Image (cartoon, rainbow over all chains, first blue to last red; front, side, top):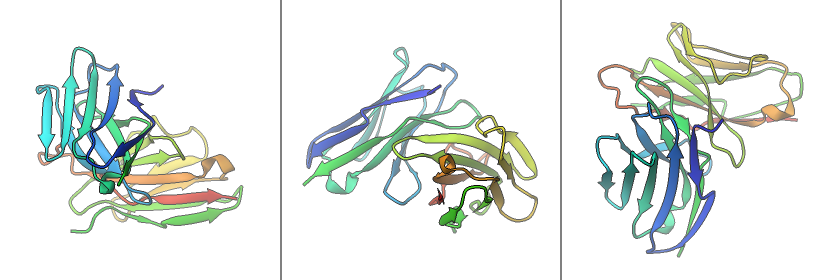
Length: 111
Length: 116
């Protein structure tokens, strides 16, 4: 049973464009929603995270939008760059419990 | 401050052999998590350990898999009698789980197991 559903599976964006990745969850106890970035052959690394008391969080070119009523959250990458090409995972957890990850989105930014 | 260290980075085993994967958490971290990543799939939680305790092993297969995190030394994920379906990347993560805990898990670079 997939606790966090992520789409699309893959995404191709032109340099300078906006990349959008979506995630949905069912467990209303989740209270921490991070996005991880993974380059080939490397481990995932935290990119940005949000808690449900805010609807949006922005760090540089990366923005999380959070819709608590719809139980959805998304990652927006503005002015996408070839160096952003990686696999992105959304995740969710509640309290002191474990992170549940989405299935990942492979982003390719074309120069 | 060294990150999460995993070894070996690559391991090849024949069916029926044992695989042992090791993970040293970041300095100051006392909580370790193991995740498995299959090609084209996400990270699947396996087990969460604190020093000398298994906190949550709900993601561990019931047979052939075991994990420990002793008082001294690294955490070990052990797979007995490996089968081809065990071929995957196994990631270890750590966290402080105290007042410094933000929710972030710090991942190692993974151990890639290939079963022939």
